Length: 69
Image (tube, rainbow, N blue to C red; front, side, top):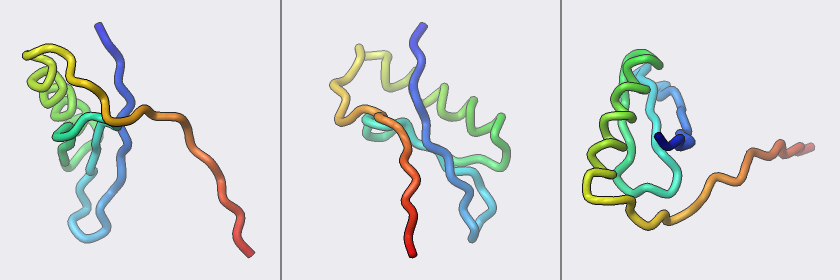
């Protein structure tokens, strides 16, 4: 069992949650609820991993607060 980090935003235009898994091209989805988004992303990751683990294009490092003004 592997754990991946997803970035999740809420689209102000559609009201949908939009998520993507860092470093995996094609690993993105959207949904009306966080629970549905989690299931969608899990399904996407399972499909991507069927042929073996692809080479990651990047790795999650962390977040940073930026103070302006």
